[in-house]
Length: 347
Image 1 (tube, one colour):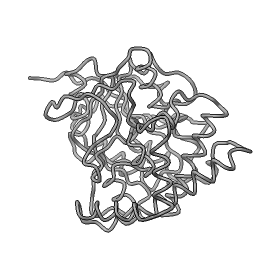
Image 2 (cartoon, rainbow, N blue to C red):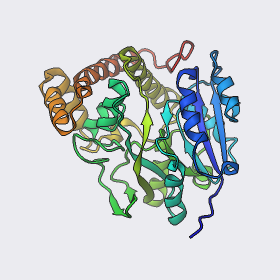
Image 3 (tube, rainbow, N blue to C red):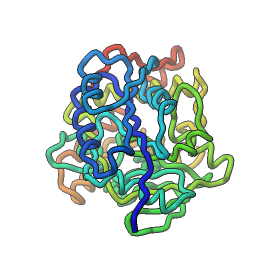
């Protein structure tokens, strides 16, 4: 049966991303999706390296992002999209197969009530750096999310793609998932697809927070249909660079505190993400595990026996870094809450 492939818009925020952007754009170029139905919109936060030259080389349309953050870049690009579907691909993503876009779009064509789709795992590659491999193994870029249980990619420690209570139907190549007020996985970015009509109805403003619009849909309608495709996406997250991991964790918490308590433009806060209950048991377990260390070592050993890779032993380090950065930002945030400066930001 011939599929009527619709136009898609690929949204990609950038800021000094020359080192990784070429691989991302090349993986889009080789897709077997009809070329005349793909547009790439790069929202750039004033890069000073070769990012813009690369974007233009691959035929991307470049728009400015004066606020410079990834969420602001998505918002800037969204104002320019023309496709029926919008795919959020970060500059450090690589599409692992030539039919990846078709795999993401076909289930949405078959299920018109589903608002979007997302890969259910990060693709593990032995040639990647140990931090990138660790994130692929645990299915997240932030180890706190493991303790909260609301991750959205396959986690080899639990064997699940999320611990958020939900309904799902296995359709073979994908899962048809119904999410409701019981919780929301950390859906968004790294290959997430949304219907443009859904975004037009549920989003506005200078920033785009993906999980917030899912929350808004559930708050209004009681539930939302979403698709988890049984494929992966490569996310070259920090590779072997521990200082870069520290910097990204610092950025994550400082930006969150700013938007939650100063800008006050978030609908879904981190306490809502803790599926273990209103007493923040997941956060307390995370703190206890970091202070005693032994649970983190046990988790590393458990992961190693499931898939042997020395990258598992970054887990205790990643957790300790996260506790320190989040804790210190929370303490200093009592006096000052501000987005982290992007003045020297590079991928």
